[in-house]
Image (cartoon, rainbow, N blue to C red; front, side, top):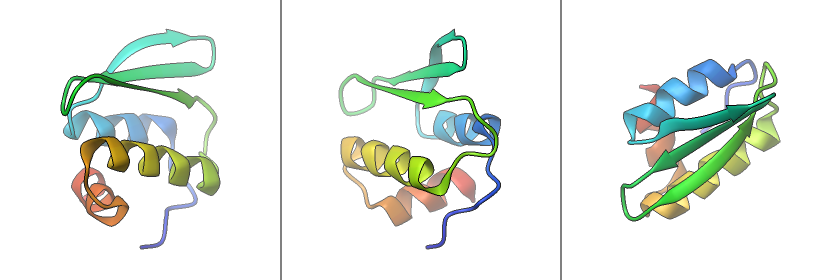
Amino acid sequence: MKLPRNLSVTELVKGLERVGYVVSRQTGSHVGLTTERNGEHHITVLDHNPLKVGTLGGILADVAEHLEISRDDLFHEIFD
Protein backbone atom coordinates (compact mmCIF):
# COMPACT_ATOMS: atom_id res chain seq x y z
CA MET A 1 0.00 0.00 0.00
CA LYS A 2 1.38 3.37 -0.99
CA LEU A 3 0.32 6.29 1.20
CA PRO A 4 -1.07 9.37 -0.54
CA ARG A 5 1.29 12.35 -0.62
CA ASN A 6 -1.37 15.05 -0.89
CA LEU A 7 -3.84 14.05 1.83
CA SER A 8 -5.36 16.92 3.79
CA VAL A 9 -6.17 16.77 7.48
CA THR A 10 -9.86 17.21 6.63
CA GLU A 11 -9.79 14.10 4.44
CA LEU A 12 -8.02 12.12 7.17
CA VAL A 13 -10.53 13.22 9.81
CA LYS A 14 -13.45 12.20 7.55
CA GLY A 15 -11.83 8.81 7.03
CA LEU A 16 -11.21 8.28 10.74
CA GLU A 17 -14.85 9.19 11.44
CA ARG A 18 -15.81 6.16 9.31
CA VAL A 19 -14.08 3.88 11.82
CA GLY A 20 -15.59 5.49 14.91
CA TYR A 21 -13.40 8.49 15.74
CA VAL A 22 -14.96 11.87 16.50
CA VAL A 23 -13.33 15.28 16.82
CA SER A 24 -13.15 15.88 20.56
CA ARG A 25 -11.24 19.17 20.53
CA GLN A 26 -9.24 21.57 18.44
CA THR A 27 -6.60 23.84 19.89
CA GLY A 28 -4.73 26.00 17.44
CA SER A 29 -3.29 23.74 14.77
CA HIS A 30 -3.95 20.48 16.66
CA VAL A 31 -7.07 18.37 16.17
CA GLY A 32 -7.89 15.79 18.84
CA LEU A 33 -9.91 12.72 17.95
CA THR A 34 -11.36 10.11 20.28
CA THR A 35 -13.02 6.72 19.87
CA GLU A 36 -14.75 4.33 22.23
CA ARG A 37 -14.35 1.38 19.82
CA ASN A 38 -12.18 -1.32 21.50
CA GLY A 39 -11.89 0.94 24.54
CA GLU A 40 -11.11 4.63 24.70
CA HIS A 41 -8.34 5.91 22.43
CA HIS A 42 -7.15 9.45 21.71
CA ILE A 43 -4.99 10.73 18.85
CA THR A 44 -3.84 14.21 17.97
CA VAL A 45 -3.31 15.31 14.39
CA LEU A 46 -1.32 18.38 13.45
CA ASP A 47 -3.42 20.48 11.07
CA HIS A 48 -0.84 21.02 8.33
CA ASN A 49 -1.78 20.45 4.71
CA PRO A 50 -0.79 18.22 3.12
CA LEU A 51 0.14 15.71 5.81
CA LYS A 52 3.68 14.38 5.61
CA VAL A 53 3.87 10.72 4.63
CA GLY A 54 5.70 9.75 7.83
CA THR A 55 3.13 11.51 9.99
CA LEU A 56 0.26 9.82 8.15
CA GLY A 57 1.97 6.44 8.45
CA GLY A 58 2.43 6.90 12.19
CA ILE A 59 -1.19 7.91 12.72
CA LEU A 60 -2.46 4.94 10.71
CA ALA A 61 -0.15 2.55 12.58
CA ASP A 62 -1.35 3.85 15.95
CA VAL A 63 -5.03 3.61 15.00
CA ALA A 64 -4.60 0.16 13.41
CA GLU A 65 -2.87 -1.14 16.55
CA HIS A 66 -5.69 0.13 18.73
CA LEU A 67 -8.39 -1.33 16.47
CA GLU A 68 -6.41 -4.58 16.19
CA ILE A 69 -6.40 -4.63 12.39
CA SER A 70 -3.61 -4.33 9.85
CA ARG A 71 -2.56 -0.92 8.58
CA ASP A 72 -3.52 -1.98 5.03
CA ASP A 73 -7.02 -3.02 6.15
CA LEU A 74 -7.44 0.27 8.01
CA PHE A 75 -6.30 2.23 4.96
CA HIS A 76 -8.88 0.50 2.76
CA GLU A 77 -11.60 0.93 5.39
CA ILE A 78 -11.13 4.70 5.68
CA PHE A 79 -10.24 5.65 2.10
CA ASP A 80 -12.33 3.30 -0.11
